[in-house]
Length: 165
Image (cartoon, rainbow, N blue to C red; front, side, top):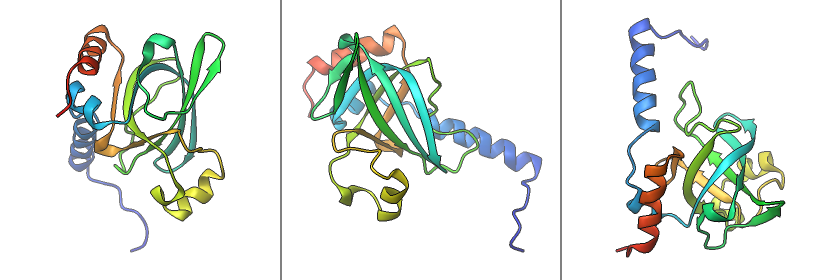
C-alpha cells in the first residue's frame, strides 16, 4: 500500500478548487502592508525551482515599485533593482502557490530572511548559500502576492501613507 493512489475525479476537482481558493485568498492590502517587512512591485526575471514547494524568485523592481524596504537587500541592475525572494509553498497543490510567471509583474509583500535559525537546517543545505540575509521570504498566509494592477497599486500606496495599528 506504499504506492500513491489516484484521486477519484470528484476529489481531484475539489482539491483544485480548494487550492485555488487558498492561494488567492483575498488579503487586504492595508493589513498585508502593515504586517509585512517589505512591499515591492516588480517583474519576475527568474524562477529557480529548488525542490518541492521551494522556489527562488528574482524580481526586477523599478524605483517607483519600492513601497517598503526595511532591510530588504536590493542590488542595482541598470534602471532596475534586483530583489531575491524565497517562496516556500507547503500547500501540496498541483500548481505552485503563489504562482510566479516570468515576465509578469506582481505586488509582493513578505518578510526578510535574517538568520539561519529562521529555516530548518535541511532547507539551508538545499539552498547552499543562495539565500542571503536581507533577501525576501514568503511563507503561506503571512505573505501577499498578487498580479499587478493599478487598483491594487493605489491600495498599497494608500496603505503606505496610512497608520498601522
